[in-house]
Length: 294
Image (cartoon, rainbow, N blue to C red):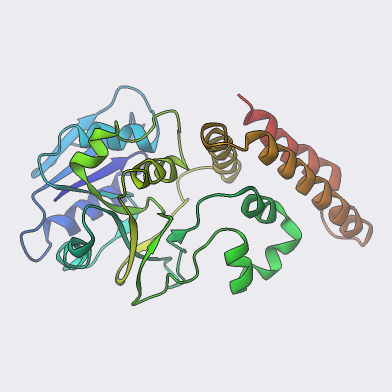
């Protein structure tokens, strides 16, 4: 396989991942490609790394597509730059994945504190995103029923292998030719939902998505961008996905309704002396939806 790492921002996490890949046991990994997505801190020429230097920042899917164009192996391993892998990771993932190939395969992904990041998901539905938008439910985020309600496939736990609707894009083993035949990632998505869209298109060809919980990595996630920008990217991408696959008007109306419910609860919290501006919060949530209409 060939590893593809999109790079943007701090060099050190990407360089650390490159070193870990170059020190892998076994010979399953043929090459490492780093796609510098017009990063303000350019990734340096590095021995043993094929460097792609993009002129414009096109986001995750665009960066991966730039790497896929150079892959000469059967499989492409896409990794976020802030992933940490063990020394036998590549061989372990390949051994777990090969019985399912061609498929999109992801290992278990843990946060630095050891908690799972819910790699396996159900295809997005309006009800999932409506419930996720309801901020009063945040206090119950650890409940299994709420995870299912927002679209997490709770069968995906350590040690389990299971077919799912889709897997998150932090680590994905892809079948190179099948992904190329579909044109790769839709570059209209800047960040978020591009991997869902790809896997839904692959599913039409009978290619499954598989979670292999016997293999794991650690992923920091979300450390290089402002939280409000990240939330706007999520909303923009989900609305684009809904426009492409159906339900955009329903999704926008449902999220607006959820914002109204949030506002009602926040008014009560504000009256109770909590440090919250209910009206400002409502305006911010509705602003995300207006931005997403573009």
